[in-house]
Length: 220
Length: 235
Image (cartoon, rainbow over all chains, first blue to last red; front, side, top):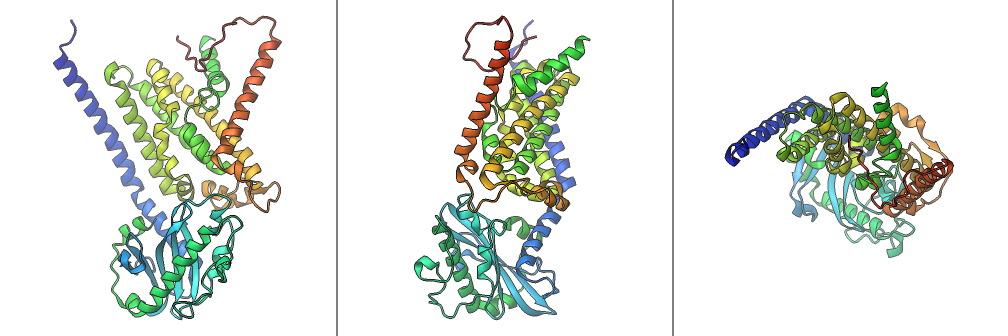
């Protein structure tokens, strides 16, 4: 006899539910086994990025835990940003600030910008972008040294006209075939330096308020 | 041995005759998107291979308990679970590669080659054969990914194994070969259109070889012209 529709449906539903439970259980198990390793990897990655722009012997605090959340409005970005503070025996050394250049050639460019307490740029790194391969992706440090041209630069005043790409009369090179990308990066770095110069005390004196795990996750 | 011949046939199907990459043309999205470097290609190829073997084995193991009406959602569930596991494992142990493969890792779920094999072969055959089929289809896919990756990386950047350390650890930096130096990259090879062109050349090459082999044989058994490129042999 053919099963009645009702029994067939409920039987299939049970089998499907069983598979869903087993599959979810397996994924859950793998997740719980890899969770700590993933967080560790993310912290290591963050630390690698931070140490590539702030000399790791210049500070001695746990930098990725000394972290402050900035509301997006502060830097003019859509999402909230993070500030990692490097201190040597509680004396501020430098701050690494994440920001977003919203006007890249192909969407947002996520940046990490480290600035020394004296206002000079310690280093800039591109965290994430979708710029054209071969043209705009020279903002990645593994493709080109361009991003290092920010090192040691200072902003003389809010309207420092050197902080533009060469095409606009400034001091930063543009790339052959791609001006929009470096222009966006220069602008974002400049805005961040302005913000840092104006709010330095507040940036270093506010209590750390990132939940460590989340902070790492959200940044990358 | 009859069984031996079956394995041989499976290997032949997966690696050449029904290669998922250049004959079935399945999984084109990740295939074309991540093959800009050889390292990325190998990474995605291995991930796909692993998922394919696991899903084929599992689908075959449960084939007697799965009612026909709900087999597709169950296959999807199984494949998605394996992909999620692979993604978590890669995130944990090959973090750099995980970042450079990005969205294409979860997209393995949508690689039709996997559900295609589950449905067409694994759900009807014993575990051993199904696993072997997964291995061969996966290898066929990996092979095409590697070929595409090699050609595009050499043409686009003039290097081989750029970023191999992301996949294999820091020691692999020495694997990087600079085939020739390019002042600026050859954009076409890196962007998706270049991938399509190279892919097209591969397909043409395969067809040419097949034609040559067929011409070498005195009499063709099958004169029927067929537009259908995928033939699942019904057993």
